Image 1 (cartoon, rainbow, N blue to C red):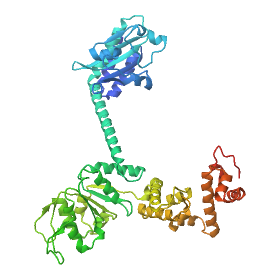
Image 2 (cartoon, helix red, strand yellow):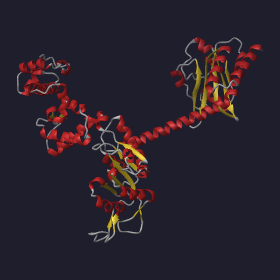
Image 3 (tube, rainbow, N blue to C red):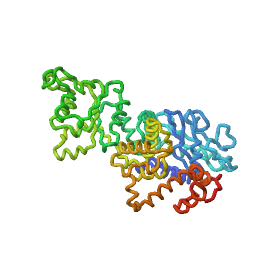
Length: 512
């Protein structure tokens, strides 16, 4: 009797100590295992939204065993206790037909000769879980009733906390599922974005595009010249709710100051010399759709005021007009300039900036996403090979090394022009380093003095390596393809310090 009272006192003290549920349950389990001759113990919880009974807290099992211990209502001992809310005592596991051993943990004679006790965890007359234990073989089976009673104490004291834990797990699972669905939806939509790039920076950019596309939010795209800001605007519009409505583009920097207001907002007949008839502006032409204002940083102060009114009140006024015209247009703006710096210099209105900068998207420079260079290069080779009718199929490793090492101040636009030039120059189906612009060679020249001999050696080395790759290290075949002898190629390999073994396949037994 004293031992039972000591146990009950220990358990009640644990649950009234203010410990978290995890700590309290684990401590109570430790006490139960120590005092009640228990070899294994586990707490199952019933998740009604997925109709599954899963293990939550356990002792004496491996992770793999626990993952197998999932039940349905009415299945096995655990499932029946969940179903009817009544405790079950099995004096000897091997004699029970209902004991399923789903965890696969009972394999020895001692395990099968042992007892099993399972008690319900109930709250408001609803069974929400179970506490079950393997008891080492006992001679007095009546002692198992005492074990069941004492496990029931833990079940009663922990019921409210277990209920809260079940709700927490449900919420966590719902969040995970919602995140999975969102990720899947984003992935599907990202596939529709025709922008090349697999780097982490670009995937983050694609997700922003997808998220903002489905709204009518104003977007400000920033980034250096040549990074593809207009492509980003195109992607947003194509994936937006307004994709089938007008998409009007205007480059603010390309228009004379005197014409910008008329171009944007239109004019009435006679508003100025030459205005022989009324004309719609770009905003009216984009009604119901999207307008893309490129190089917004070049907008003059007076026009910044007028654009601010459009953003605030959603109305425009034509040049020479007196009647405000309501508009429904989504605005996407872009600039390569630092607008915050221009605000400090009183060159750009802060209130307009904050109206435009509702959802900022910064396009990374090419030097920040060099992992995408090869994909971009292959795209441009395919594009310009088709345009020029040349059979350019690939680019040499040395040329790729130069492209990756370069800092690309002109970004993707510069890379595109570079590959266009290389495709035109290439004659044998391969773009080599000497087909690239001189600016890309300069970084190499800094490391190595640019003499005629060095330049010849560099080109010879590149060509020999390329043919060694093609022939999988077969020097005889490489020499034949190059129109020379094996002796000369072998001599060049040794002279130029080419690591011949890198290019040999298991089938190639050729030696230099």
